[in-house]
Image 1: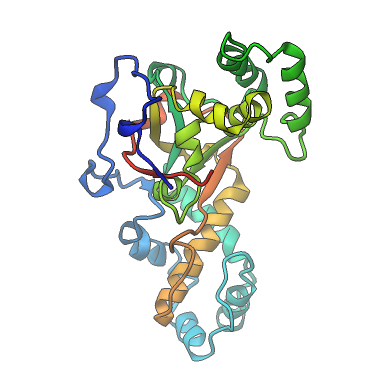
Image 2: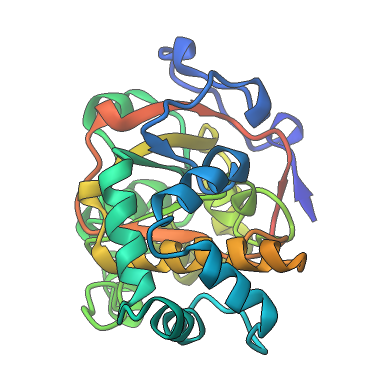
Length: 301
């Protein structure tokens, strides 16, 4: 099922302001990305650059050896296949995922990604930035939306039970203290990405609370009344990204390059491929490039 906010009877007005920061939804119509910003879906902007960046290691000899005897599986999570070729040909014992991540951090200042939410007030983001989940703030929002005359049965005790059930503050599995973004914005909009619920209903924690308090149907109605689906386009300073996150993308980049070198398809940038990342720090407002309101979104819920 696809959702279109312009046709939704529950949609309410946005607060005015920041219209000058709106971007085209079509990426090809946006201003050119700066050279020091890495954009994962824009392969043409980094393909030759990354090959050159690793040219002292991924030499022509390494490429020939790879092509003569390619591994059964060219995968990004375990680069043993590439590490072994580099060692056999160049005599260098390297972990290519770490090396690539390190060089990317030296070559690029920022990493382009999108953050999906639903809001009626852009000012809180352009003035306060994007914030990691504070469970208590989401719970206060749930009080404002669901502890109303429309739902007289919802009490503080109900909310406390919902909070305990979700256990968002659990450090081993909760989302407290995390800010989620996606390198490929389309995966937050299309059916193949399957994550449109962030745009349609807002934060996942708030939706989960609402579902427990008033049921899924009523929670969806309430959350769809809040402003519009909003995608914030951000340039994340690479210094704010965790090393492990950058290494994951480094592995995906190498998988793509070597699959392409063989003339085969890589799935890391294919339909439905994941490109999510999370920060453990807030993203200051100066790193928000702009926003747009996706017109048509696949609703996985």
